[in-house]
Length: 140
Image (cartoon, rainbow, N blue to C red; front, side, top):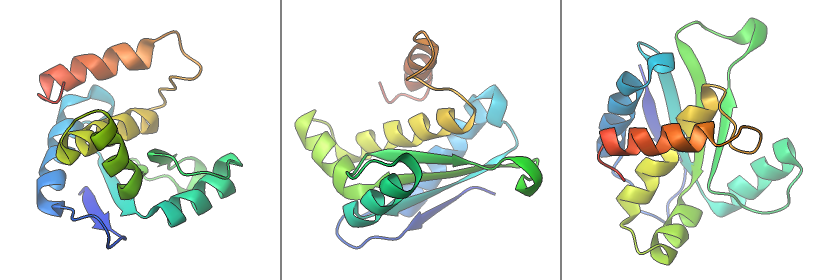
């Protein structure tokens, strides 16, 4: 079962609403059907720490994905998506979007990374798929 975990206090997060969206998105993506994902909301401070540890970047980012692989993988659990609530709020404001919409886009983006998509290495495949899914999920 997928779950939402809120590990920050600054930004109000409606966990139930995002859990509903998470399950809807999982059922829309063939690679994730009948699988689960966890999504954690963290502060910028925690995201900087994670980004430094795993990507060697000393800055915040909006979303990180941690697929479960190898001997520790469970066939029904894809991995963890971590979202900086602070960064999501800034991006929503910059893009003139509601925070809820920004977060749903980040959840979808993170799930696609868990499926192995990589917009930094592919030829636009992940972006095209993400845009199609945004339309289907009504978050475009």
